[in-house]
Length: 143
Image 1 (cartoon, one colour):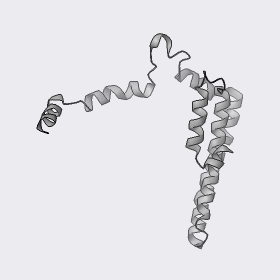
Image 2 (image 1 turned 30 degrees about the vertical axis):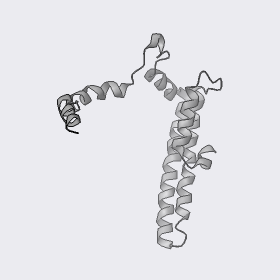
Image 3 (image 1 turned 180 degrees about the horizontal axis):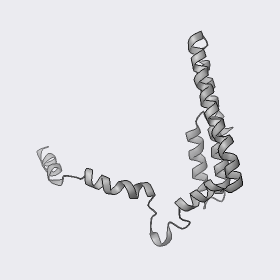
Image 4 (image 1 turned 180 degrees about the vertical axis):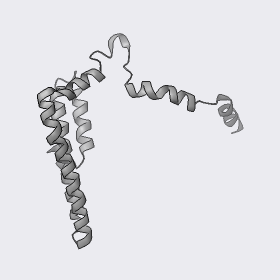
């Protein structure tokens, strides 16, 4: 319902994710609850496609193509949930995958957790992107 009202699954999912991480606020969500809420947010975004398609009411061909696109979008979202929801309910694979990706105590002793993407991309970025301090100094002195 929040996705339909906000017209943005991204906003709704961002709110859900921030509520999962909110341990100090007292109203934090459990990861298992959040998984189902994210699935619901993805279904809720299907309404946005139908509303956008209605903008083409004055043009028959455009309306037909717009509704066809919206229908494909809705079918994809519903099929994903129809496939993933029972698997998640039976096995909890998304929950366990999340637990494997994010350590339970990542802020222990002032240490920050570094995600797997950063660990993979950082060495490549260090080789490709490096600051040329001499050039920066020359540019700064010329001005």
